[in-house]
Length: 217
Image 1 (cartoon, rainbow, N blue to C red):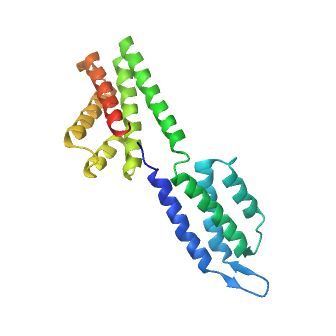
Image 2 (cartoon, one colour):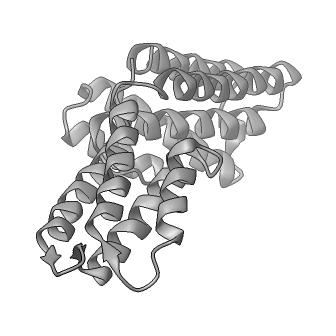
């Protein structure tokens, strides 16, 4: 089962640290407590961007945050900041509790199944070139998911394979197989795909699917 997205959890942590700086800028005058407007705006813009990315503009989190933020003109009252901060904390708790996990897992698996199905269709037609390219795209998508799970930055297929192997995410046998699949794709792109049989590309697809079953579930 996949874990929470490393990039998102890191951004929530960064927001929490920024929120502490905003809170520590508190000033109390004769009217009410305020916080530094520049620090607040920087934090609020980052928070809105994250809420939009994860939950969407129609979500209660985004709309409630935006409603408070839009009313702040020159002075940022501590109460307004505290309300916005509470919204972000609630959003973080829902995310970390797995409120979106099932949906995202479903979508991830749907994409992988679609790519696998299309690859099989082209193999049946004898179009090894297209099948190999699609199998390579499937592999790339899987590696991106594994990278997110392991906290490893995404990149090209070769880069992700190297990084995951260095992070001890899998053994040398898996690492070498992925390199071999990358060589196969490069040969097809270079117009040298005739050296491979349909059975070779089919074995690549089956290998990628076994990798999915092991790493993603």
